[in-house]
Length: 348
Image 1 (cartoon, rainbow, N blue to C red):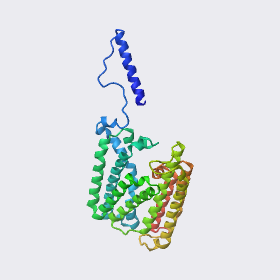
Image 2 (cartoon, rainbow, N blue to C red):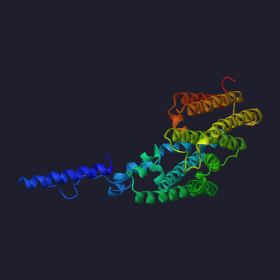
Image 3 (cartoon, rainbow, N blue to C red):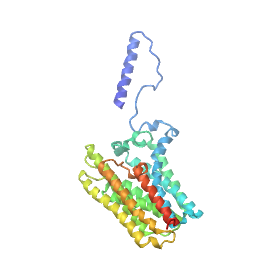
Image 4 (tube, one colour):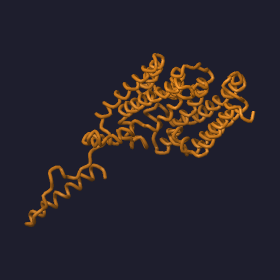
């Protein structure tokens, strides 16, 4: 029922009551404010209590996106310090810190994009654009979440706090300006993923491997290009001219279809070069031969992501797709098993 429908229903009810009175019939007394109306988008949340909006607030915080912040554990895992209590505690705390900061920035981004999101095919269902979460509560929750996250980062150490501030600054710049600049938006998003690794490096106090950082930029650039490609194709299917709020045009989809797989293969090549030139030097591994499974598995997964994108079967969030996609889960399990074998030195 849209707002005009509810007004029509209410007017009909009033006419019925008036008609009953003229006929000498007693109409039931209706409590004040019982008139059937539907609030416009954005107004519903303002009339609900703060506690009633907690589920909507948690949804806007996007806890499922915290899975991306598990990247902070990767440097400690690859360096072998993950089993040490000190580094493990520091990295776990940095995960909580980054998740709170990220949730705060998600809320800020939804506030900035509320009008555009109401016109988006899927984002219109989010709590703020749909009116299930009030703007006032979001304005309070966003800075509070960010502040707590920064305090936790500062408690770990000054370098961790600096990395967290860099992440926050780049996220805000992305939301305000960079996301409207084609290609740059993807580069910044890949940089934010890489900053998660940097946060893990500073938390665990391990060496910053250039192989890992370059690999991260290539891999996440490919995934972000996939996200933009899917959004652009779906916009064209709905008859919308490009992504006006992102700066992309319909004619850009072939370019994205080239850049995306290319950067994905860049990640595969980086992984191959690491296994050839550097992995054997790491005393952490018991048998580096098992690492050769990594490039093959990554090639298969990147190829699947882009195959699904080209077929129009990929979600506009490749990460969310990966955690539900059975072949992706299977490939991830095989890669994890290969890592365990390389680390333990079994069958070597």
